[in-house]
Length: 599
Image 1: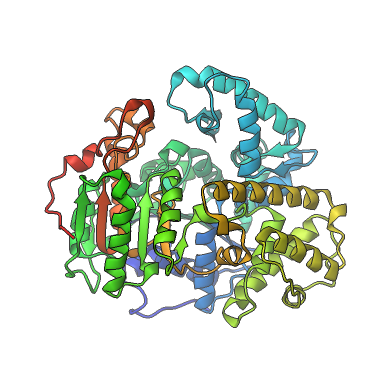
Image 2 (image 1 turned 90 degrees about the horizontal axis):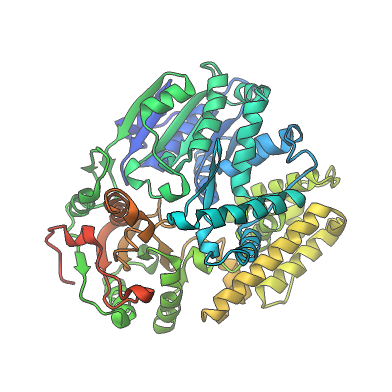
C-alpha cells in the first residue's frame, strides 16, 4: 500500500518534493522541514518498492542523523527492512569494499578500518621525522586522482608528502585503511570493475543524499556512477543548503545542478523549500545578511512576529567570558526556557573544553552536553562501540525498537566474522543483555565486564576471532586516551559510568558544541563566542581570494539560523594569538550595520 499523508503533515512545497518522479535537487533553507521532507520521501518510496531484493539508500552526514531519520520513519508505521541508511563511508564499506574488495590489490588479503585515534597516533609518530610539522598539519582527503593536502602552507607540502608516503606504506603493510581510503578504494573498484555499479543499480531504485553541500567530489562521482549505470531506473534525491557549505576545507562543496545532471546522466528537477518554520522574522532578517547563495527565505513560524533579542558584544574581556555566559544562561532559564534549549557555540573545540568545565562548576544544577565530552571512541564501524550502545541504554519500552535494531546489527557483525549465530535472535541477545547486573562505577571497567559477561552468556569466545580482538584493543586504547585527555583538562567525572550512560540519551542539558558540530540543530537560545578574525573565518581561509569573507559568512549563517528566539554573539577581547599578539574582531561582523539589542 502506498504511503499517504494529510495536508496538515506536509506543506505544498514539501509534498511536491516527496511526489517528484524525476531525480531531484532540493535546496532547503534553514528550518524548512528538510528532515521531515526527507523522511516522508523515504517512507513514500519504501511503500512503492516492487521487489523484495530492492533497497532505498539514504546517505547522511552523521550516524546520529541516520538514526533520527530511521526512527521517524518507523514512527510513521513504515517498514524499514528495505532501507539502508548511514554515512557514505559506511555505505562504501558495506556495499563495495566488503563484497568486492578482493578485486583490489590493496584489499585482496583482507583489511581493517582504523579509527581516528589510531590514525592520530601513527601520524604524530611520523611527524617526528620532519621538522616543523605537527599532526594538525596532516589534514587530507581523496579525489579521483589521489590525495589532497588541506594544509594551506605550501612550504610544508614536501615534508607532508614524505610523511604521507610513510603513512600509506605503513597502513598497507598492516592491511589497514582509514576513512579517506575507504572512499578512494571504493572509487577505484567501481572504475575498474564496472559490473559493481551495474549490480548496485539493479538493487537501488533511489539514492538520497542529505546535506549535499558537505559532499566531496569523489562521493558525488561514486553515487553518480550507480545512478548512471541504472540508465533511468535508478534515481537520485539530494537535499541541502549551499549557504551552509562549511566543510570545504575537507573537500565538501555544493555541486551545481547542471554539473550533477551531467554527472548522473539522468533528468534532474530543481526545487526549493523556502518557508522557515524555526526562526522569528527578526532572526531571519539577521542571518540573511550572510547569505552567499541566491536563496529565498520566508518566515512561516507561528512565533515569527516574536521580538527576538539579538546582541553583539565586542567589548567583553576574555577573563569575563564565563561570567557573561553564566548570566545569560540564568537569564533565560529564569524566563522559563529549558536548559536543553540553550546552546553555547565556539569555532573550535579547544575553546570550549575549559569553559565547559568552569560553567559546570558555576552551574552545578545544570547538565552540559557536547560531543567533545563523549568519554569513549565514537567509531561506528567498531564492533564493541556498536555493542556498547546496547549495554549503556535502559531496557525501556521507548528504547525497545532502537535496541532491537542495534542487536540485529551486532548479530550481523558476528556472522561476518564467522561466528555461528544460527540460534541467536535479536530478542534473545537483548534478553541476555538485560539480565546482566554489574556493580562498577568506572565506565570503561563497566564496559569491559559487560562485554565479557554477554559474550560468555552467548557462548562466544571473541578472543579467537582476530578482527574482534583488534577492534577490542582499538576501542579500549582510544577510549582510555580520550578519557586521560579530558581528565587533564579538568573533567574528572568523565570516566564515571553515569557519564557513559549519557552518551546515548536524548539531549538533557545545555548544549556545548562547535559551529561545525551543531549543524542540523535548533535551540531557543544560541550564544556564540570566539567571533574573531582567524577563527571566523579560520586563519587558513584568510588566504582565499576574498580574505575569508565567504567562509566567515557561511559560519555566521549557520550560527544565526540555529536560533528560534534569541541570538547572542561575542567577540571577546584580549584572547592571545600566540606570537601574533591577540585576536581581533571578525571583519564581517564589524562591517555589518545592525540594530543590536542590549540584554
